[in-house]
Amino acid sequence: METSRSKELFEQAQSSIPGGVNSPVRAFKSVGGNPLFINKAEGAYMYDEDGNKYVELINSWGPMILGHANPKIEEAVGKAIKNSLSFGAPTSREIEIAELIVSMVPSIEKVRMVNSGTEATMSAIRLARGYTNRNKFIKIEGCYHGHGDSFLIAAGSGAVTMGSPDSPGVTEGTAKDTLLAPYNDLTSIEKLVEANKDDIAAIIVEPVPGNMGCVLPNTGYLEGLRSICDKENIVLIFDEVMTGFRLAKGGAQEHFGVTPDMTTLGKIIGGGMPVGAYGGKKEIMDYVSPQGPVYQAGTLSGNPISMAAGLTMLTELNENPAIYDQLTQIGAKIRKGFEENLEKLGLNYTINSLGSMISMFFTDVKVENFEDAKKSDTAKFGTYFHKMLERGVYLPPSQFESLFLSTALTQEDIDHIITSHYEVLKEMHS
Image 1 (spheres, one colour):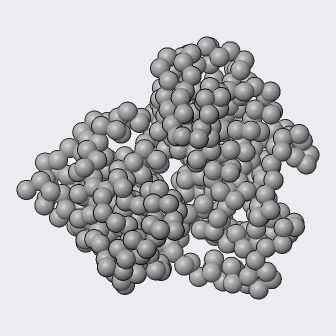
Image 2 (cartoon, one colour):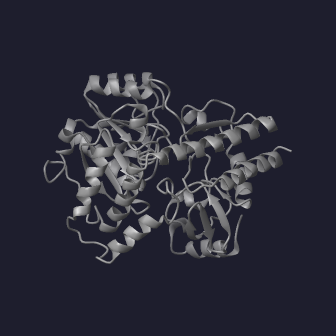
């Protein structure tokens, strides 16, 4: 769907904003057409600049677990605003939210607040290098850790081949310290570790990737990473910017029972406000300045408005574990509806899901890594996306992004999503 006001705004934005958007996926390039400009959101619904209403399944890429404009969070933010928007000085609320995070996340004994997921992952890698006095780290193909230079690296071939920059502006010097391995492949990790003996500071992974679509770890994969890191004195980092507090109170690490050395967080801990955090074992976190030698700073870190929103959000999740049962039930209903639709239509697309994360891939292969995900028919997804949009269902504008569901979805919303899914696929394959 393309509305007149959104089209006008996108054309206007081209002259003052690169590509007309402030984050690339918003531009709808992978699905075609022009993006919708959103005016407001409440509960499970978003409204564009022409007043069109959409059931939305992105939830600001994850943080709106309780839906948009949650009254408790809005009240907390309103009260905090009255005391000023920023101090650049410590506040008691920073301690409250830090203590709450420590109590909820298994791996975190100390935590440092930052302003975005990218800042959290950049800081975590620097800290792991400083702590181990090693230079290289392993990232997993298809896992997204923000736009820090070290993370924008394409695959090299073989255990000793260095990566190459995946974006102009990333130097070869930076790329040589980033090693790449496929998701769900422990053998490739073992080869990299052996080929770079005693020079790997960290392995960073999304325990459940959401940026190649929702992909699940095979049985033993996360445990295998933990074992390798223990054996080789490598820091294991779980990037739980998406999964933290979404899959369980303690994130994916609680769900799977595998505890990393460090965890990066974002989105949810600000209740939708700009925020990030990294935390982990006390002995590692004590290497951060001013206590230790690894420097990291931020004027707006621990911003009082973000802390007010995040503390309210996390308190709600911590005190109401039934929220996770509700999210799981909603996810299960949507998955069941999608699977029944595929069966009725004789289609064999792949669906991956866990709790409130779900993806349908336009391929019949089992999707276990990024190479599998790339077998999806992205042109078909683009058609599917726009036809769902026409029926008032707002999906992530990319085949390679998970849905993120909220507790605000009603049974009526779920029925509408499933019905629209059936109608669209039937129309596409008639």
